[in-house]
Image (cartoon, rainbow, N blue to C red; front, side, top):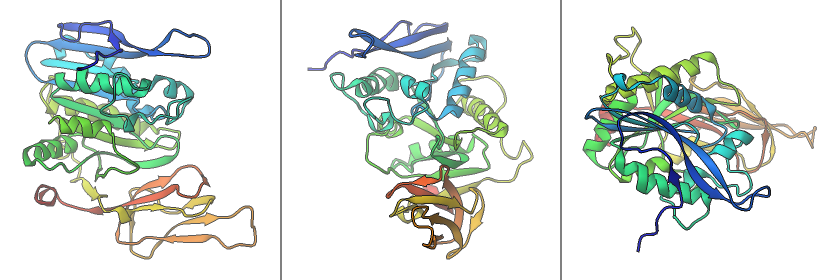
Length: 344
């Protein structure tokens, strides 16, 4: 027996035109025993064409995508659309308000909540609504992330390397359509239950991003979030207008970095104060000093040196200095070609 979702939507997701509304998610709070969370949602639809689901705020402190999605919600009009665009600009509402990665109170990681359960905790209820209510409607799922407060991630679009060759090809093409200088291939870390994986398992064309982070977004990264999102919408055929390429923009070919080797993800075995030395986007050589961990509680102790375990590029640097044992401090990527991605 399939349990009905406790999440309700106050707009008709299948109607033409432009609608802006909300999802109502039950919750219990200290100020309201019968309370609810309001998750914004909008649709812009006209005629026949693909359905694209645009998501942001999966993690609350990742605002780059939230701003781009909110701007899209306000500016996109039906006459620009062939098909349908569904927009959720702020999935983790309370976490976004609190400027936290995890949901306040429960410490739930929404991006480890899928496929979700209608009778589970609130994060799983919302995940279940996306899994059963939104993903089946969509042909394309765009999930915009950044490094949040804790990490500065090389601004890029990225992807899983899925098993199905046809799905892999269209995901690669769509990733490249973001027109970022770099792209990244990633693997699941710290558990399963990712939103993009659930969408991929349903056969969707999935595009994901990492748009900086570190608690501040430079203007060029906001610009990349906006132009990349719009170009991908044109690329998949849901939005009118010419599709731009790196060549048409007068830009060199992008660099695709492979981060699927777990050895590229470097953590600290001790608590301390992190000093990042190499900026994301810069090349590194095996043995090169890329960071140091200092020990404020023991001023006589020399810092621990962190050296690159391989040639490649810096992709992520820890953005906050205070480091706990087990924290990720940097991530590398190794260049790979589109042909190698399709053959791997």
